[in-house]
Amino acid sequence: MKLCTRSSVLVPVLSITMLASGTVSAAQDNADFEWPRLLVIGAAGTSSSSFAFTNGWAPVLQKQVGSVVRVVPEDNDSMRYRRLTERRDITISSVSSADMRFQIEGIDGYAATRPAAQRVLWHGNDTPWGFVTSGDSKLQSLEDLKKGGYRVAKGVFAPAMVTAVADALPAFIGLSDADAKKALSYVPVSSYAENCRSVVEGKADVAYCSPVSSVLSEMEGAPGGIRWLPMNQDNQEGWAQYLKHRPMVTPSKMEMGVSSARGVEGSTSNFVYAVPADTDEEFAYQMAKWFHQSYDTYKGTHPLAARMSLEQFRLYLDRSPLPVHEGTVKYLREIGAWSEQDDAWNEQAKNKMDQWVQARQTAMTEAAKAGVKMDFQNQAFLDILNQHTRNLEGFKSRL
Image (cartoon, rainbow, N blue to C red; front, top):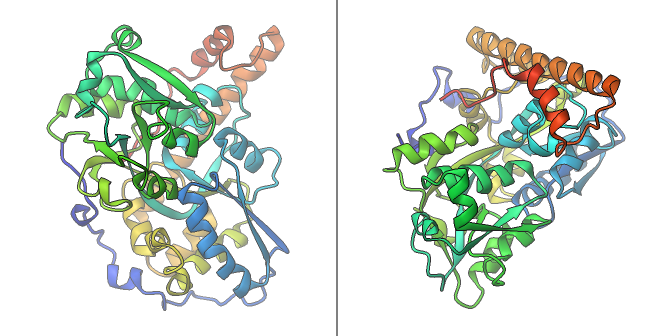
């Protein structure tokens, strides 16, 4: 298992010098474009890095284009998805690539949500993640969990986080489902901040967190501090099993965030800004253009805002399986940052997403006609869903 760091990612053939420049002009200024009066951007809760760095660039956008830009904290990932795709009271959503996979494929808590095609608008950040414990914990490694009697925080607000601790973590340390039930107990938590704080408040022994979140700085300053349990690179079989459950992440060393995490082996999960597939192409084009050309203006508003450069976006696109909005593609093509090869994989990604949406819609129609309750905890509904989706290929990083 090769450990990925940002310095080791292969640079694409496209000229990075050109991509990184914030001065590349588009083919047309499109000065006549009328920005929406109100732009609502959905992000995770107020203690999340997603909310923090979005609040960095949003005021800059408001000042430059004249729209009223509001950043709305919505800690429940399923609700944020519904607000983007059903209620439509969110224009753009900050979402992890991992969670978007759950949304598309109807995994766990998303099984009964209305399927909707989405598109990537721009890259948010490459967020490091790991498993944290209190500074005075008896745990010295993740493998120690196999001794039994330990409590793991389970963030029920986000299906992807549930999978990380309930499925991927036991698989990484070599516990079967039956052994995991005996060795571990799970502590349900209703928000990201509660999830992370649980280890310093004595409610849980391990939590799955990102070291760049503001709540981790608070925790690092708590009596006893915190420690991170490495996801050892040498555990190749563990990583192979982990990625079966979390196929959108990549192994990496944590290089950003609180000092206690730096240099510790963990994983990287990319956050993107997503929009519904039917979002106006010209709006998406203008947003992509703004993200690129105004980068030098907003990159200093938050450390993670610096990860929104076109260079980082381009590196992400070289491994992303998620379709990109045509408005963004139009802009990237104009500045020479999009190739025919990109067209090929993007069309495949769009087709794959359409297949998932159609299959899930068919399953929900069948369930409705049969009077089967559409609920992610109703096995009868899950059986119908599986019948229509079992032959579809899932989304995973193009490593």
